Image 1 (cartoon, one colour):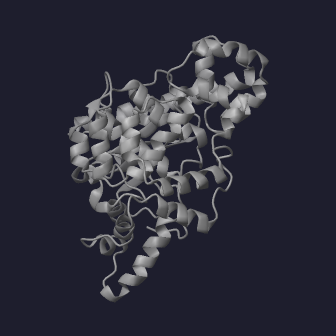
Image 2 (image 1 turned 180 degrees about the vertical axis):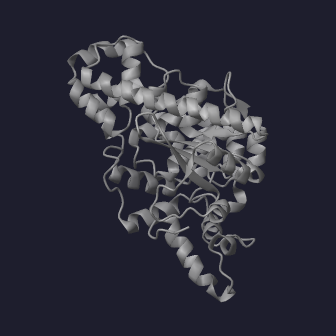
Image 3 (image 1 turned 180 degrees about the horizontal axis):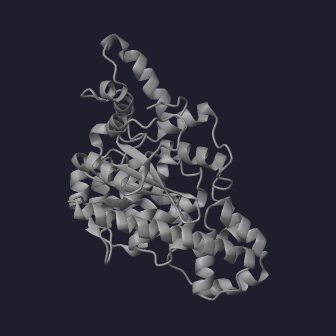
Length: 386
């Protein structure tokens, strides 16, 4: 799986991308590399802005014109996203709503100085469930258009509210669209039971503000857990590729983690298997300082660990845009990420009427049919219309 580390271009890209390193040592390496080849590799993994930022910050070499042009364009776009997120959070705060910005948006706002070094396609936000519809109105009143990017989803607020999130866009100065997601469920995924999802109100209560803003940031432990599950959601090896594993590296390097609390949260959510690989991969790629006792506590049984590593090795960490799994491979891979067989059954057939609420059916005799649909939705075979 990590044979990619034998490639000098991959090693150089990862050395520049990680949050702690001896960047000066990379100067002689860059002097002998084909910069166009390094650039193309970085673009493939959405890390060209990250690498350009490090090269310029530490004056490692002259950045080629084509790379600098793309870097500056991306910096302008991400600066707009950062400023707009700050504006939205300030407006929400004035209306009595504490909004948390998730994943890369939160990392950029709280940990990274150069917006271009924190690539993302959109801004993901979180509010309390009781504030969701009010926040929706505020976004509409401030120029955002309620629109899902997927052609399989329809702009029905009540359906979106039940599902947990909505999407919007606003036009940027250059005519492109800035996408914004509003959610009341922070941590949702194929491998987390609905009844084990962290309480959003508690997450927001424990959140803090990024310096000089009203941008809410999850506590370090909640933030790390959220990005770990997000990494697993992308199956570790799919787009955006190696950039995906930078989130863990950045949070661990910039924040003091209460590791005992983090492990407890992962265990309480029944996501230890998914989280283990989300921590182990950046530990191997970036030498991210994950305590050995943490990995030991989260590590699955040897046979399961070996099976997952075998699958990941067969699909590889390079070429993230290529198809990685057959449907059968993907199904087996999904099943292996559950902490237990009981967790898988509970995700497939949630208790407390969640399945009925999700699909809005009335006849109980149809339950087996909707269990089947639920399974197809979870592995991405069927596109569920909203």
